[in-house]
Amino acid sequence: ILGIDDEVNQMANKNAVKPEVVEMPFSVEADIGLGDSKRFMELFELSIRPMDIQKVGVGVNSGNLTIKVEAKTYFMPEKKLNITDEVVR
Image (cartoon, rainbow, N blue to C red; front, side, top):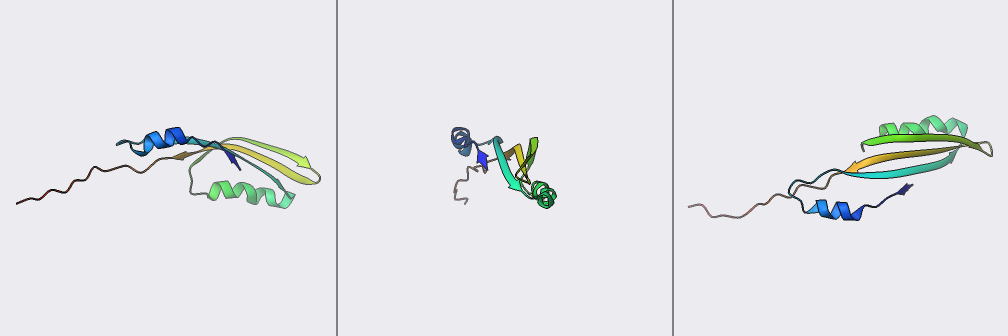
């Protein structure tokens, strides 16, 4: 799995009162047997993480399939609440 760590955007968003969604592009490449190709793609479908699959490439290498998936997922930092202590009489 390859990805781009966008730490600058993530840190800027971390302390924001209204955090914004940060796109996190990644790619996955696997050499798998022919029978495992369906299960491999099902793993993306069953993920609880929202993903925008942009490109799927399939090739053959020594009797196995080489599958490359390029996609984006999204990260949203927790929202900070400004809570203060106040004595009410």
